Structures are given as C-alpha cells and as structure tokens.
Image 1 (cartoon, rainbow, N blue to C red):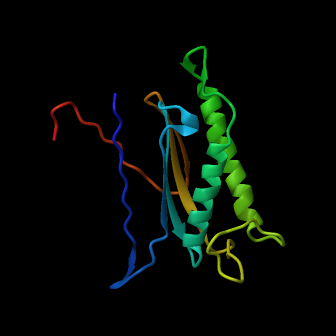
Image 2: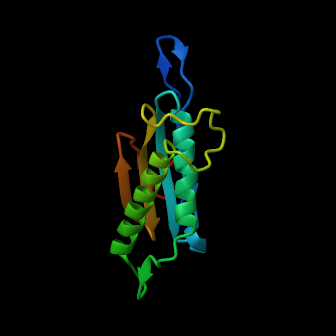
Length: 156
C-alpha cells in the first residue's frame, strides 16, 4: 500500500506584522533503509531564537534516527517496546543537547548568532510519529499537533 504525505507551515503574526516562521518539519521515509518505516515530525519554535532551536532539534533528531541500531521488528512482528524506547531515547538525547547549547562548550548549531543560542527564553515544541508497517508510535513535547487523514481508492 502506497503512502502519500505532505506538510505545510504558517508563520504567525503579531497584529498586522508577520513573525518569522520558526517551524521545522521532519520527513524521513525508509528509515534505516526499511521501506516500511517512516519518521515524521513537527517542531514549533518560540522565543527570540526559536528558529535556531527548532532547526537544531530537527538535525539532532535526524542524527539520532539515522544512527539507531536496534531492530524495530522481532520474528517478523513490530517490536513496540523497541519503537517506544527509540522515541524516548531520541527525545532525551535531544533535550540534553538543547541544554548543552547554554553551556561553556555548546554543540555545533548551524546559523546560530555569534553570542550563541538563548535557550533560557527560547525553545520549541515537538511532535514525532514513527510509523512501522502502518502502526504509529507518537511522542509529543509541548502543544504541536498534526492531522491524520486517509482516502479510499477513488476518493478525490
């Protein structure tokens, strides 16, 4: 069964003045080379450096999922505890890395301003969906949301 997906973001506004779009999206099909595994994410930055934080989280998460080595299936069946553990571990790892942005030796944050990223007053929300053979495992940090839709053959 073929999976179609898309995403869009919309920058907020303050009165009639548009705000910088601080959103980021993750769409990773065939995770680990497996055509049955997808990762989708929605991130919504907030604060003065929210756009830097959401991009940093996006790239750090991608590295976590690119380098995972634990099988998500066992004996031909989905290993739900392994999927939940992968999501939890990735979120914990990224949280540590975000906190490290405020430390004396911060991790690389592409595009960050010369003074570093203010994570005391900036951050992002996160919604992740790990899909394995049509089963979904969800992690949510904050108030981001997504909409799931489906269409029957012949629907427009």
